[in-house]
Image 1 (cartoon, rainbow, N blue to C red):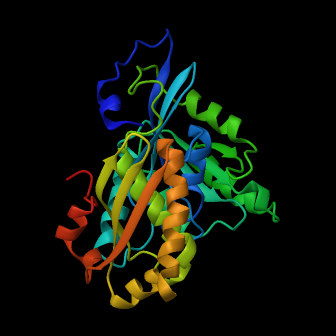
Image 2 (image 1 turned 45 degrees about the vertical axis):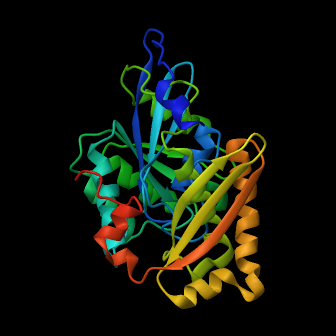
Length: 311
């Protein structure tokens, strides 16, 4: 996934009647948006975690088939923001609604239709963009009557509906078919062999952040920002130096762990994931910085790449 190769790879002419377009994946936090994109693209490019609000950037995943190129825009979960970072994330998620060709509105069909889903549905009533209501987590559903409320919601708005399990793969082919049917004829927007438009450094940082979320869970959930400070490529080894930024000394202590045990575990797990990304041996060095209230600072947010995308 070389950044230079991505820039200069020529884009071919697609076959006749080829379809393409951008698909915005929106929904409440933790309904499986990133899992859906990873499954359809066929490669892990977005991090997943049991912790809500894992996704921060509008990450693009690219699926190219013989009949269509689908560019998925995975957005942060729409929720009530509690700090400047949250406001930026929600504004970006909302702005994607009118900036795509199809909206995939994902809900957790194993739970009852709630106020958060209705709020997003109201946001979507003003858009002319085709909407697919995706009923995810069908493998976890025990109360079939939940479907009736979701189907009523879709029928009232003339939305297409698709039921599936992104974790198990059931129904995902039908979802892909439904998306393609809602796309207009169009060109290749990206080279057919590309799976994301994000540079390697961004993905590396996200893979490190994923392991922090998985290993620390609620202790240091969203006060973390990753900076890839340096990448040194050698013939048989890639050296990656990354800073983990937190807001409080107590969070730094948690990340370091007793005798440095936690930071070692995070580094080992993240290195294994990064090696899959770049297909080679990786040396990963992590260190922790304390930046008080960085999530409240527009300057810090901009430094870490969190900008309102329509500004």
